[in-house]
Image (cartoon, rainbow, N blue to C red; front, side, top):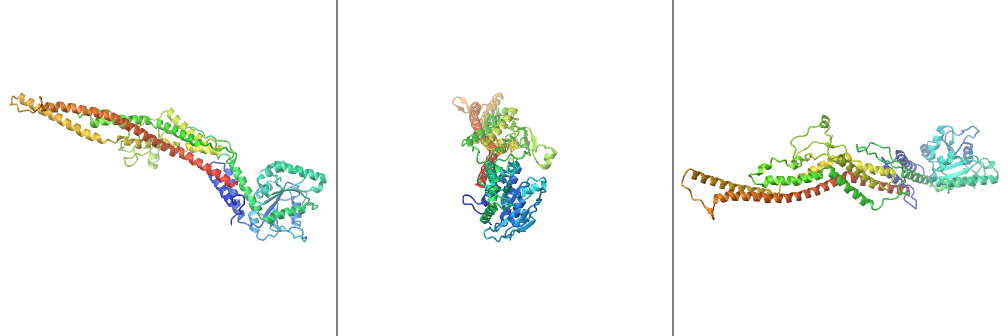
Length: 602
C-alpha cells in the first residue's frame, strides 16, 4: 500500500526513502544518535502504514492534576479511567475506541492492552467520531520514571496529540521545553486544551487563553488550535468533539504525523555532530579536526565555483611534493647519466671502452631496470601472511612497505632511491592536508572532518605506490636505442681494419727483420695500405666514439625529459587515486546527502 501523496510535494513514500538514504550516507560521518533516530522514523513509518489507516490514534497528554482522565471519561461517555485525588492516578495508558473494528493490530503495535468501547450518544447532533482511538496517557511529570518513559514512547507513535493543561500549570517549563517546543514541526497534528476553566471567572479565562496563545506562539505552534473546556461542567466539550471528529474524518492525521516525523528527523541530521572519532589513518601525528555541528542544506553557504580550480592547484602541489619525496630529480639525473654511460659502453672505441665498465652505472646504483634475482629476506611474520613490512623509504610518513620482488613480467624490483628527508616528508603531509582543507572549505563540521579524513585515508599506501611507479616508469629508460647496435658493429669493423693494419705491418717488420725478400706492398697514393688501415682505423674509431658520445648526450637529455614527464604523470595518477579520488567521492557523497535531505524535507 502506497502512502498518501501530498499535492505540493513528493509522496511520503519518497520522503521516507530519501530520509533512509540520507541516514545511510551519514552513517559513520554523523552522530550515531541522529542516524539511528532517522532510521527509527523510517521504521515507524513502514510499520504504521501497514496498520489501519481508517483509525486515528489521539492521545490525551498532560501534567499531574490537569484533568486528563476526567476529560477522557467525558469524551468516552463513561467512567473508564479512575479519577482521584491521589497522584499519580493514571499508571498505564488505556484506549477508548469509536467503531474499533480492525484497530486491534494497531493497538497491539502501540502496546495498549486496556481497551474500551465508547458509549454511543443518542443525541443526533453529537459527532459519532467513528474511527477515533483515544488514549489516556500517564502524567508526563510523574514522580515515577516508568510513567514518564511510557509517555515519551507513545508521544512518538500516536497520530494526534491533545495536550491537556490547567490554569495553574499551563506555563510549566517542563511541558514547553521538553515537549511543545521540540514538537513544533508537528503543529499540524496537535491540539491544546485548557481544562478546568469552570474554576475561573470569564475574564480570567480570556486572559489565560491569551497568555497560553502567546506561549504557544513562542514555541513555534502558531497554528495549533486552543480550546477552553471543562470536563466537569461540559463547557466547550462539543467544540472539542467536533474538532476531533473533523480530524478523524479526514483520515490524514497518521500521514501528517509521519511527515512531521520525517521533517524533524531530517532537521536533526542537518545539525548532527560528527561521529565518534576512530583511529587516524596516518601515523605521523596529524589530528583530525572535528568541526562543530552546522546545518546542512538550508543555511549553509555552498562551495564557491572556484573550489574545483583550487583543488586542482592543491593536487598539482601534492604531485610536486610526491615527486620531490620520491627522488624524481635524482632518478631523472640518473637516467641522463645512465644513458650516456651505457652509450659509451655500447658505441665507444673498443680499445678504451672496457675502461668505462669500471665506472658504476647510475641506473644500476638505483636498481632501476634491474631484475632482482633473489627474494629479499622478510621477517617470519611477513613470510607467513605475505603482508607488507614497514621500511624507511622516501615519500612516506612512516616509511614504505617492503614486499616480495619479482622478475620482469611481474612486479618490477624495488628501487634504491635515497630516502626522503624530514622536510620532504613534511611537505607531502602538508600537501595532503592542503587538499583536504581546500576540499572541505564551506562544508559543515562533520562533513569537513570526513573530507579531511578521506584525504589522508590512504596516506600509508602512498609511499609504496609511488616507489613502485618510479620503478616501473623508469624501467623504460634502460631500453637500448637501435643505433647503438649499428654503431657498435661499425666500431668493430673499424677495429678489425685497424687490427688488420697492425698484423700486416707486423708481418712486414718480421720479413725485414729476417732479411727476407720484401713482398710488394700496395699503397694509397704515397702511403702503404697497412699504415692506412692502422691510422685510419684509429682515427675513425675515435671519431665515431666522439660523435656517438655527442649524440648520447643529446639523447640522454631527451630521455631524461621524457622520463621526468612520465614520472610526473604516473605520480600524479597515484596522488589522484589515493588522495583526490577519495576526497571527490566524499564530496559526491555530501552532495547526495544534501539532495536526499532536501527531498526528505520537501
